[in-house]
Image 1: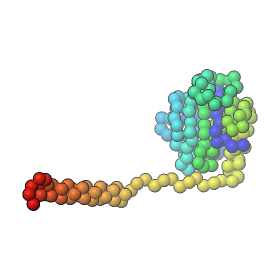
Image 2 (image 1 turned 90 degrees about the horizontal axis):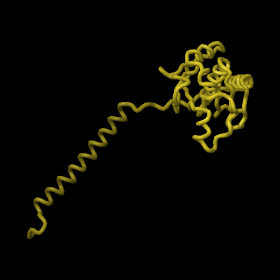
Image 3 (image 1 turned 180 degrees about the vertical axis):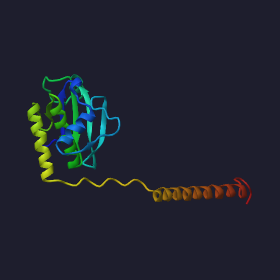
Length: 194
């Protein structure tokens, strides 16, 4: 099973905070770091950057009311009648992202009565089944790790210097064309005898 796109169903009041999740993940020998001010039960964020055992990663994340979740997406599966909130996760681009999602979902399930919904299999998982599913995913990632893609390099000063020189050269050429046109119009005005 892939945990690439899955959700947790629970009551909003039972959603643990980020600090509780960090402590629960640490009990299993992993470390995870959320961005400053990340609120697990509030709002919706698209990409959540995290560090898993120091490796930079992240995942797609959204918080929805269970009733509104299906209403927002006409292709959404019929969710089980459980809880009032959907925490939607999607791992992408690396196994580190998959590991982050599995660690966080397992911690939330261990700290609450959350149940799981695996999108690809359209499968409802009870609390114990979701914990087992996440644990199996974590073990699979640990058994066959893949390095995350190298982060994209930020643009350095040489790039900006090159762009500035190209723009200055382009402006100089345009200025020269305008000057030639002006001189030609002044020295050889239209309608003047030649």
